[in-house]
Length: 189
Image (cartoon, rainbow, N blue to C red):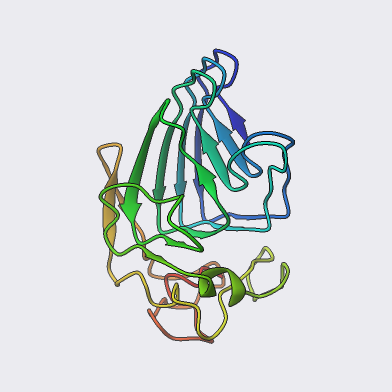
């Protein structure tokens, strides 16, 4: 996703999506927001990022506000296996309950965030049919993202309340934090 580059002002909201194996030459392997005098706005909620790269530049996962840009990024309840770049040209709001391999995708205040190598290593290795209408990549046993989000949980992003733990997942199963086999809020299958 490329939002608001080259003087543009795109607005994107992504919810419950898996980004895997995407690549950009320079900025934001999965998402680039507000670079080169742009002002893109991106909100990412309850999504999974793994294996995304930007080999010639910054932010294999998400990049925002490069080259005099003013991108705005809001993240909450995301699983972020990879790095982000926040060069300071825009703003980055962390709604909390994010799990990352490092803290480059986090911001303040970030209630409930966790980081470590297990976030990326304890994942299914590829898109898999986990019982819903789309293939997903779910955390496996030992991943600190499992059960991270309390039920119920709501955060405020951009002044709006956003529920993080739905009553049912995409398969129609009741959510139960921390239970493997029946999707927890974090497993998002």
